[in-house]
Length: 353
Image (tube, rainbow, N blue to C red; front, side, top):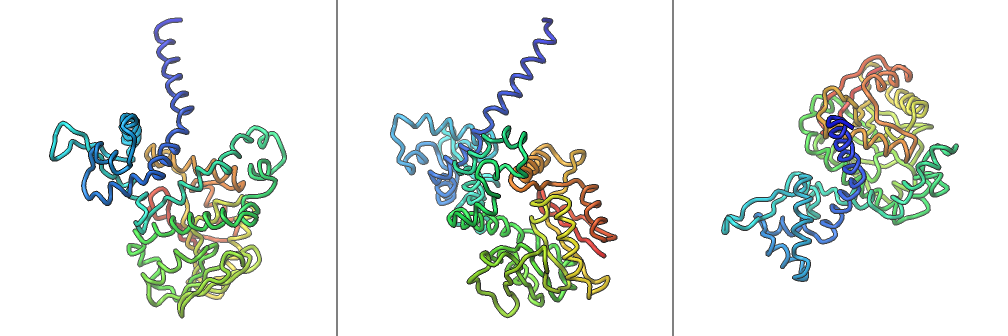
């Protein structure tokens, strides 16, 4: 074997090992959250030294070095920053990054429920059935691993259903970071239906941002049961495949990626029926990913492709390219659309009849 081939094999080995050990990233994130490290740094008010962190964690002296190595790993993955201490330039201090700020529990934008749900041992055990699922006839991995769909599993296990609702609510709170910049999209509307809107987190944010807008949340009856609305916010239990309340616009946030093309077209047709009385004024507002490997940076593409795999195995759904979105819109009878890349790895899409 010549030297060039050896270099290529070692590069291949490095790439494989990086993937093989990649499962340690969420595990270490879980470690940090279980110990409350984001909260400790946030409450400290400034970068915290290793000794201060260890003291707050009440770690045995024999494991101080372990904490340092965990934090080095997490800092390399941009979860924390490492600085030199202001008081002692020879000592390292740890600070929050935009990522770890989203793990502080008293933050309005805390995403810890997502981490908890995606690292749950019972749920992640399903991944060991991937080969069996791929060779079999079950539409989703959950059906192979658990004997039911994810929706069925959530109905059977109230604790998981509660956590899933927390996941959706925590993600929805990110919407308010850009909603004030979307006035042209919402300001001319009098009413909107948030389809699959869960416990109403997104709808409440919209109502607060646009005081003249009335919002209806449509979700399954067991999801919206006992939820309290207001004079501008109401909850309706129903099935989006059968009927959607009439409104100026229909919002589909993180909904269509759960479904295959056939079901997406059915949902979009029901949405079209909902806005039909509004003529050209009616529209669909979609918040979801648009895969664009040529224009997106590596991190954003990685997130979208990971989400695509997650949707495939959980729901037989998918993340889509612009062309794939376009084909859905045409299949449902829509003529025009606009894409706004304003939600990080997701975009906002306006769709018109």
